[in-house]
Image 1 (cartoon, one colour):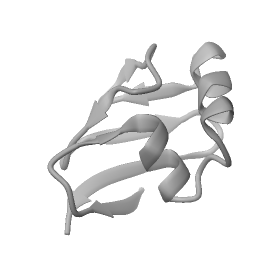
Image 2 (spheres, rainbow, N blue to C red):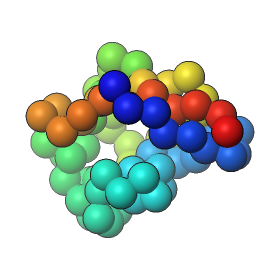
Image 3 (tube, rainbow, N blue to C red):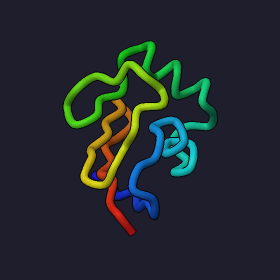
Length: 71
């Protein structure tokens, strides 16, 4: 499990994945979601702009698992 540090109280899922270099674009995030590959704290994600906060765990099947932490 890798750590992603954020300096804000929340961040949108698509922004986080692009900022961390996990996804190249919002369109790629949408494809991950449409294919059912992204889970947030063990629950499938259905919205690209889902609010993410420190302590959340994001998993993208066959790509990786990340824990979001406050800077």
